[in-house]
Length: 370
Image 1 (cartoon, one colour):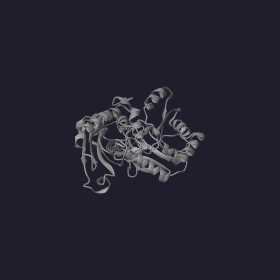
Image 2 (cartoon, rainbow, N blue to C red):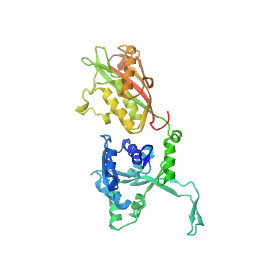
Image 3 (cartoon, rainbow, N blue to C red):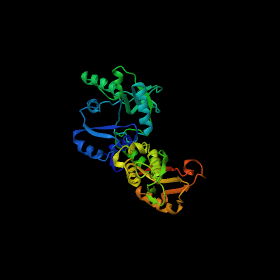
Image 4 (tube, rainbow, N blue to C red):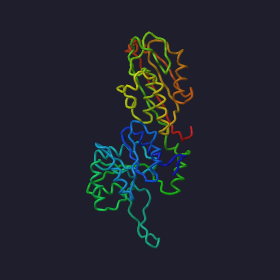
């Protein structure tokens, strides 16, 4: 089903892709949907392994198929309904932490509505005391070995399964409650889909504020290296030392952008042990970060960065830096602020031994109004 002009599955998929603790994603789908699912994962980030697994006749069978396909050595497995598109990184992190600490965890919300038990005739049979009652959501998280053992029993003994925590409970393991979010609702009917569309087209702006990240980078100054800042080669006797072109300004900005989206740090995406990045222009890496953010549903609101350097004078080069950085991020120059300052002769920057850069970045969801 489409949501916001994209397949419903992509919304939760992109959230899990962007979580720094997630290393593998298995999509369990019906046989008729496998090609479409493969198309959705074709542009997945290289940091996450993704594959499509055929599902079974029941939820129990589908989950068992996924557990069989997990990579060896998997520590924690999360099972999530793709029909819950608004799962957040906070909920995912809390579920992982609880599963690691307790072995099994279910995301759930305390019931706020009065609960009635109905009769066969459509009348109220009883009012149920709601204290202590929770509505289960997903993800539900487990130590991988516990999930496998529990589901193996469920398959062998033909247990009925409505949720994964119930399987682990029946196998005799206590399940920890993790408080969820009202936004993590499940789309099961037309009214739910209509509400989700309204949230995507304006309503979500009220509950999802802009995301802000902070970045910092430092590099040593050495002879026989070009000085590259913001994609601009600045005339100077010394250049910055690094695996790439050591563009300290671009690096700080990338660090801030990744931080705002909770996508890890620069070294995790572009390690200095990878020969592909030897001598590479940092603007190439910045374009890749921008593309990653767009795949995660974010757009850049603005960036504000400061270079700390005793020499040379950078003011004449700042307009060109802003233009290069804006082009790499598919933004406007007005969205990119670059400033330069000295450290008044103090510290490594003041001694001319190196340069540092600081940056803040603000992101918003691409499907929300500016």
